[in-house]
Image 1 (cartoon, rainbow, N blue to C red):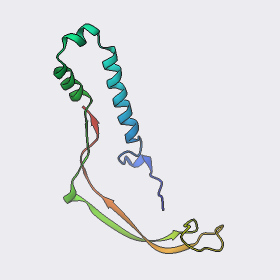
Image 2 (cartoon, rainbow, N blue to C red):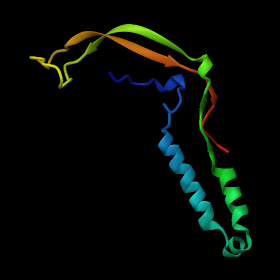
Image 3 (cartoon, one colour):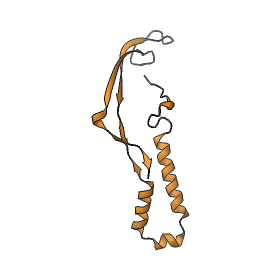
Image 4 (cartoon, rainbow, N blue to C red):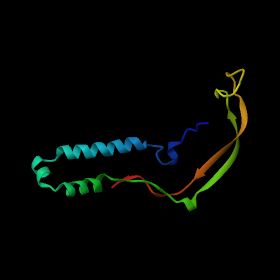
Length: 115
């Protein structure tokens, strides 16, 4: 079962996509390198340029506080009418079976960010 995320809850990556954020970061770095003056590029040590770009455009991954997470279990009815592995004679109506929803909650120590 797929649940639609309410963007107003402020959940991680619910209001923007990770791949989109990473692509924007890569594009910004590429544009900065392309705009460099050729003399500056030739006169700057490659190691210094590399360190500058890494510092400016590196992305810090999230860190989960594993000792502070918890799980909630909830009994739910699951509609399986579109499950091809089941024989269901009338797929135009819901075919409900007992199921369980497991929700994992955790606290983030660090968020994805551009330095």
